[in-house]
Length: 173
Image (cartoon, rainbow, N blue to C red; front, side):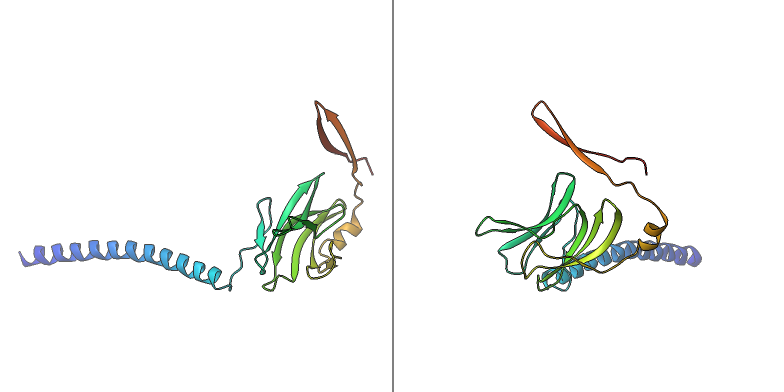
């Protein structure tokens, strides 16, 4: 009889421990989210990233940096909210695949892809004249680019039913 009684209490204890483990896992998730939010709000962690929906408030609270797509290119652009001006940060035949802004809002690091380069990191000074001159930070594809011959894309446009479409041909090398 005592053995059954102890087994029952052991069973109940195990059930409580399993429930406590589930609750602890959920609390760890909540605490992790709260810690992440604290880091965002306190400025330790910045939420600035690239992509079609990549928007980043600049520290002055008056400007937003965003990626703008057009003509087969994706460029970084600063939108000045008081004036409504759109100030291009980047120029040329390129696509900004991702970006990040420093805490002061003075520099932008960007993963830049171009027709003859699959991607490198560049830095742009946001405090000077725009569009900014890129400073190349990496050359990770140089060895590969030296060993292959790439076709230079030839851009053209055509129009149909009032819609203009950008297109490219890659001629043989």
